Length: 190
Image 1: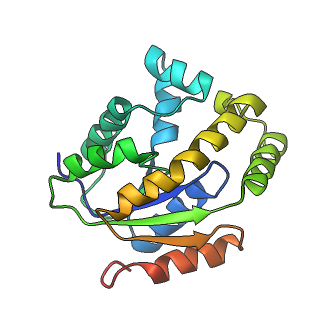
Image 2: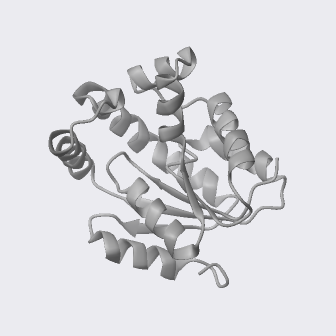
């Protein structure tokens, strides 16, 4: 399974991964893909494994991540691919490496956001635009933030052992964060 060049946007829930993945994809003429959106769509379509993961706010399993990568490989044209929030933890890094078949270009962006700010952003998201996302419930969101915060250090270490990774302050203005991401890309990507 070979994938196009990839930019992985990593961070805790509320860090702006979706916003930045879409903005960076637009800036590069590429496509963004969200493992979370894909899993929620599967759950809504009746997939029991996906529904269980979403309802509990549980971490995405390596098998689910591999299934996501197969899906996007079949759906995404051979242009830049911006992964919104994946890989999610260090268990997903070798799954992504296998999907690339050692031929793929990968660059990672870690959006740093303090836990209190992440919780506040999720709360604002829930109150300003009511959603049917069960993983944004107070309980599930707190669990997702805690799980992802705990996983980020190990994920960053595992990711950096294979590919370049930059850290960007996600508390800044969205357009400034996008500009910093695009400016940090290796030569030839932007």
